[in-house]
Length: 258
Image (cartoon, rainbow, N blue to C red):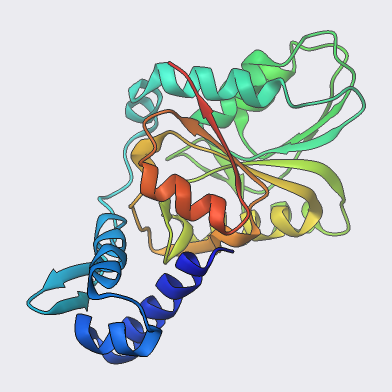
């Protein structure tokens, strides 16, 4: 992590502890110019962690995102981006892999783009993904059981969680409702967050797939912190500041051209 990133992380810690910071005090604390501190505060403001105030900055209180959209609405939103992300993610799957496709409209596009003759194992709790994979004769399909949530036509609950126990997979492709650098990866539905955390524990590699509209959104239930992500596949509209911040903490960000 670069010195700039370390300093900005410490400034954010001070913001959380104190609620506000002053440019002159930070300049003396870190032995850098006031101009450098203003750039740091500007960066934190642009990625939604702080709000500029006279002589410094204050901690920005994040709000939860808008209510979860209907499934058909999700499918129509950013359809081109999701298709491109799904195609890129499918290209990362190797013959013989055991992978988890989390529920979601973006992960569905991974299933659509998997080669029909590829031999691998796919585990999912999403009915649409299972239906798509069923047409791939060489793919071994494992379906998690559980209670059906009609909001997104996926299965959750104790049976699904029991099915994830003691499993080990090569890759998890995780779809998300919200992604915030401070608050982490999040979702609207608590049982989904619980199951997603179990998927993360089972995977050797965690790959988040999401269009750039999800950045800056915070949902009620946290799944994991950004530093635990191995790869993130998104579209080219990701903000430069967010890209830099993710790169600094070791996330391999793959931008899909449109």
